[in-house]
Image 1 (spheres, helix red, strand yellow):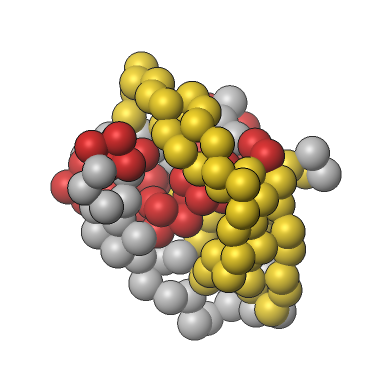
Image 2 (cartoon, rainbow, N blue to C red):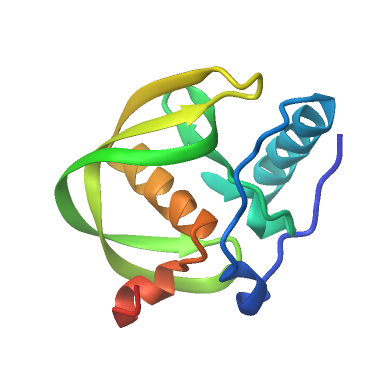
Length: 147
């Protein structure tokens, strides 16, 4: 396991991530390294693009532990609220962002099994932020209204 470098290269971060099609030990190692990196950075979420890997993988800290989202898609959202956000790739910036407070996400786990989960409050906000990363959207774009 390893702690990986978190990129701040906004040009790279704006690239859209690819769908994960192979669920093997290389994927498991990457996810495990993402866990270590997230813990070391003391963050609440991390997308693979933030460590230089353009695959649709995100980790989200929830009250029940760290949730692995592979190929995630938000299929329902509700109750938006303005709240302060920051980002491990945009150091020192905190902004007010409008996000849903409840979402339903369809995704896969590290073994390729499909699941659906409802997330609320901070977990929902974090999942939206990380899924935005997978689509090449930074939270600072939400303020500017570019996306």
